Length: 265
Image (tube, rainbow, N blue to C red):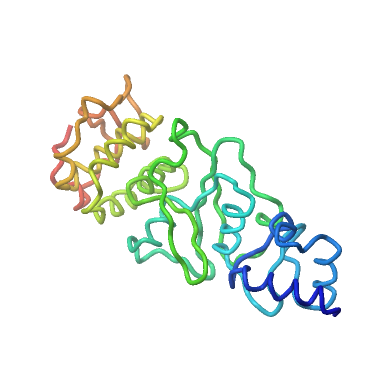
């Protein structure tokens, strides 16, 4: 390889985080245009992840390295949320995140995952949902998670549990949502308040408060529910359950330990 392309490659590798995907747009911004990228690939310095996406040759990339490229290079409003975000921040240790596990991503309404990200074998089951759950402020309740050589945007626990509830019962079970809520003893009431006021899902808000009160979390007492719009009418969370008359939702008629403090309707 000629000295100039090799010099550009060396500079490129110093700015390319280990384990992260690099997309064509970002490579061009570093001075590696299409012909030069082709030369690097031909010479075995980089290898293709998919159309317009690359990895360092001989290295490995995981889904977080792909997500980093979506967020930081393509500027797509996509983040890791729900159970995935909770586990990454020390909750739900029993959930599998490695090979064979599942990863939940959320994007703003109308945002599509690039084909290279959808089609690459990350070794996990990818679950992607687009929502308008916090459409007035899509970045509400998001935070940065620092990894070894780069960072990704994930939901803070306060938002992540609401995303779990958004997926109940179609993709997440009521029982697991209750277990996850039980572990959230240190949520920040100010952020919870803000998210409840912004959340566009009546079901999520009602179920969130039902579970939080069932777990008897101390932070619940610091919320001002008079500012939260819980909507009107009944909502059925599960079929064949019982009606909780306070929040007008139908919940499983079980005696799970985490909701033992809730009076039967």
